[in-house]
Length: 253
Image (cartoon, rainbow, N blue to C red):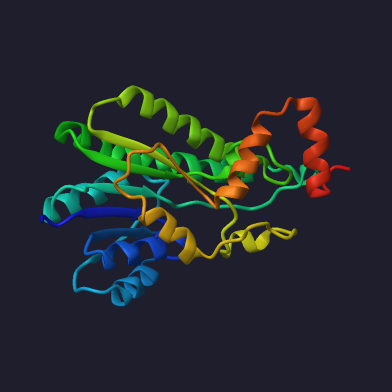
């Protein structure tokens, strides 16, 4: 079987790091990207199999650098088969502390960073007639949640982006898929000032993602009970949703 190549952004820690290790354990070669070059070098040493983790330090907000990184990797190792665009940022924002700068920063990383990743790989995938792009969004993109205005907006934008591309690409051979996890225990979610229900470890989240690589379904979501509860909230009219979400979170009451 030919060597399979993947690209994982946000690979220096959390879900991205664990996804990279699991792909390498399945004999994939992985272009591992993040801003933290030293963390990527440590990941290279931790991964099983010599040369299977290829560190690619890059800032996802730099579209030109992202494209150069992909072109250089593919020139050396061959086409990237699967991309997992996982890099993201988060900070809770109370309405009383509304920050245009924070909204701009999270949109630049969470949304534009994914856009830059897609732009770097989609033309080549369409030319080859094959490829898989997984976009790590969030259940926070399903509906507006307290304290999550900038984060949720960026994730809702990703879901809409993925839906639009999926509908248009059709039978092109390129699969656009979206990942909508619930709460995962990371340094980012540790900022939340509330108890997070159905909290998963990065290892559990990564296994849920990697086990579905190569699948056909549009959405990967977990843990199922929690995420389906949030899906049901999307169906509620506003006059029911706002009082319910205030009661559930205890915020805005």
